[in-house]
Length: 503
Ligand code: XMP
Image (tube, rainbow, N blue to C red):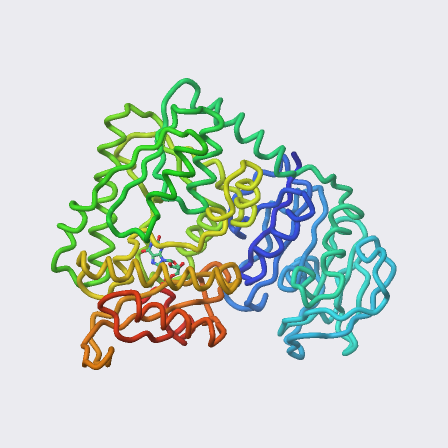
């Protein structure tokens, strides 16, 4: 299968480019400028935009391996400027241009079946003053900036972003590049992909046994069902009930994976162990650390019992790119405990069948495998569970209260059709008591905070503008039905400066 490499120069849009290409049923993956790239199956390369200026000290450069590359290259924004500089053209600190601009397009395969004037999304400080020899402009903006150019052989350059929705015919430009310029074929379909992956897993694991920590979240569920399809009950699925789960969570997992899929599901009741360890602990990072370590211990015990040789993990593509990128750019805010980073010392071989898929692709694989919607559309839930949604010390009493309140909030969201419209929503228990009046008497009870956010993969988030009637109904039900709660508040902070979870 031929693939496209998208070189990420740090633009917030590089992943979007990868997605747009995959939506055209062509396989694409991200590389970083200084990666070694194996060109054997690479049919085309895209150089993304980036926040730097090509003349800035330390700005990422032109990939050397691209010189010997014989396919076609689409270079966007920063990518365009890199190519121009590399081949002897001139890039200057120009007029800054952000947002919508009208460009006039010339005749070229990349603009086939597109009107001559379109509105596009620009975001650049530098601009091309002179093209290298052999290049000619194919798009000019209304302000006179060279918005597109080509040498007609190897390079197609765009100053604007075809991958964002604000660019009219952006999808068409991308598909023209793939099919008209590069002559690629659509050959990356979910069903073929699943069958191929099942075959690979069979070959890798052979007659051995494998183990997976199944949380019931999208990634681990899809991975488990896929591997189950390959090796059946030789896949041991371990669900750890650490006592920090939401209402009915364990029962749902049992219902779907044991009853419906007939999988080898081991449910470990470790509630006592975890609560014991968490007694008196109030610091969020300490809680995470304790839960993470205890989880690994429980999991290791199970792995030993079953004599497994392989560890299956639901790592997905954004985890892979994020950890590659985070070494370089981002600071650590919270130590996210996931099953990721599990036991090197266990001496198990790692199998990560959906490592190259984006979340929405993982969902499509799940649909194809017949996994119910309520699992595939489930909001993200942190590994440490309700422990980071009870501020301060975790106790059974508080867990019981939070579980009920959270359940009511989620039910209300579903009833009003908002569950699928928000990215994540949940209740938080604040360890303070507030005065209220119930019936004729004064009460002094806990406060529940409701949180709902819209987000792109949790990196940033905006609080959801939920209808007042919905919030009203949730607050009434919670204060009426959950003993110990006297007040409900709604969190209206975005991320940043707040994080999505309260701890
Ligand atoms: P924050 O709170 O950092 O959350 O804005 C971003 C996303 O990550 C989830 N989250 C976690 N997930 N272990 C996890 O597996 C954790 O310790 C953890 N902390 C936060 C959070 O639910 C949100 O989706």
